[in-house]
Length: 208
Image 1 (cartoon, rainbow, N blue to C red):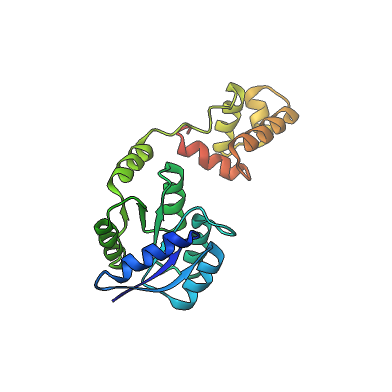
Image 2 (tube, helix red, strand yellow; image 1 turned 60 degrees about the horizontal axis):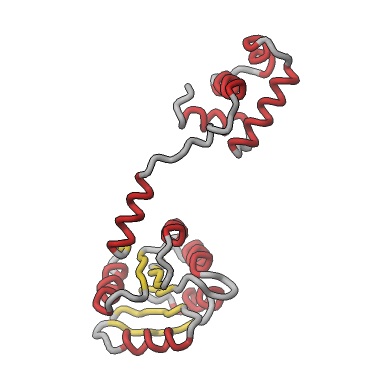
């Protein structure tokens, strides 16, 4: 028997899902919650085999609740069940730890199959969503180095090679104060916390 927890803020939807799932052999709904926060608490208390999680909910939304649940219970198996066919929700949900993503208009048999697959440890995203998600993931990413000026790129290259501010100043024939300003701008534009992290970004994008 696969035990299920429903986390869904719409009462009619939640009740309808419970009736549907309880009629399916081998599935049993052991609890319900109407918001993400109480859903996480209930999941940690009941430890169901699979959690069916809505996205748009009060207090904690489905992505936030999934992240909180998976952080507290890494073995949790969450299926996002939603009306929202949005790529950003898919990416966020998978990053949060969800193992399945299914739209509420999916046939009941597809829902049952997804539950059984996720309960068995598989990851499943509804095919039409998965193909679009894959295309998005394979799309070349824009380099975060684009906003850098030519001079900032020169400074970053030397910085990544381990040059000190004085060495950079000597190489580029500029003052150390100017180098410090360039380094500060580089860290800000790359959202890097320090020179080492900036150097790692330089390597990642082939500047060395």
